[in-house]
Length: 195
Image (cartoon, rainbow, N blue to C red; front, side, top):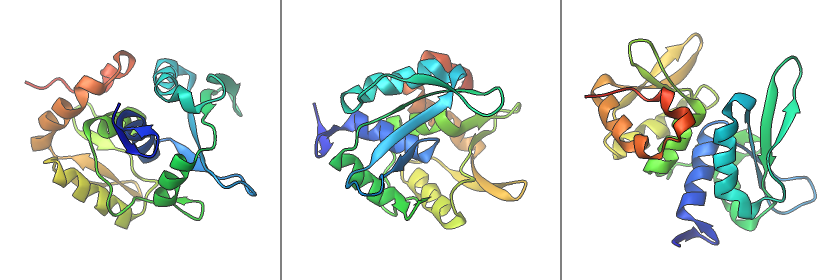
């Protein structure tokens, strides 16, 4: 197994970082010294949550559980244990309680695939979006540069009053080629069929 930071394997680290670019959330409980990760998706994404759990379970105390939220939404989620290696990632991705993008972020195929499965979408005319509205304009520019570093061209696209990332048409095929080997079966509906 290849370690990248402390005891995290490259796969574990990639899943965590991809999740933080998407719907994942980290925090440190007041009075404690280490961070933990929360993975929380709709019950419709059960297979996806199970995939993340099975990839990270050596850091978890218990398996994912269903939880009814306000209204009819049923969430399916799990938490990792607190861990010093997660704290290192937390310190890169959080300023106070605000999630930010580290200036030196590097994207690899698994990070991209997790990010896309979490927060990616395609339009009817095969435009590809990464729903980055939660991040500041400056942080989204960092992500655009990170995509450019792996030969994926993208720009910011205004969605109502917020910006999100749109992969340019000439890069959709390359983007799909990078992520498709890592997209789990239940999420393959998000892929764009390219020639």
